[in-house]
Length: 305
Image (tube, rainbow, N blue to C red; front, top):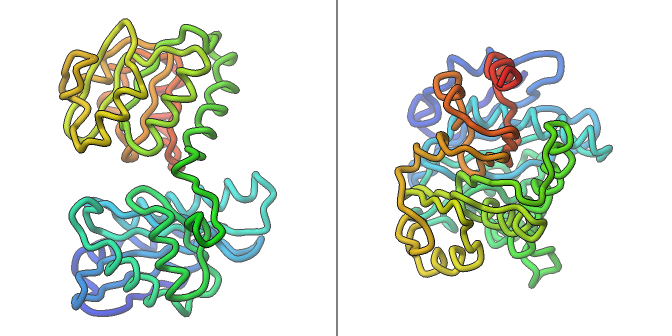
């Protein structure tokens, strides 16, 4: 494993994870862990190139205020496994920028990140939570390599089409017979009604499921009769939060875990289900959109429910 710190003040921000970095290594990787600090632009980032045995590594660039090196590694490992399972000639990687995408100067940070990874030629960035096709266009403009590009320069509009939500929808369809459920009439809770959660809810509703609760970072709503997914999406597009939508009863976000349903979808940050709250979960299927696997102890607890 190759660990490298680039820029300034390697012990600050994400660099606080440095002592734990060497605990990630195993037979698969990671082959590179790079911490990037550019104080002049306020950039604090991590790139983990996990494995390149199958080819150059592909993985998204995530932006969030609470990302860590450990999260980045777990995402990178999941990309290694996912790309291998799909038979792609690519390894796995992931990168994270510690910033709030709603308030940060995304273009300044993303372009600075791209310049910092110019020489890491075995990594190809893609969009992830907090970034989008436009961000990939900025990266391509700087270093000439990125996937998930804007439609205007030949890319496929993944967010517009709801590609991740579409994949999540099909994963749920495959899993439902294993827990003795049909999609038609199934009650669904969406934790994280954002780019992924909205499209997952839309496809599930079109398939006959009933969305009975949803949340975002500002609150939640529930409606046992079903939530109008498109109306909630239009409400969100005005800048309002889920909790102020008139089509449901406002709840605290944490209350979603207590709602009885057939399908519970965590479509926001990882690790919202933990060994401390899993016993409250009243669902037959918990289907995550994120690539991070649940921890072993939690997997056992979920299996016992």
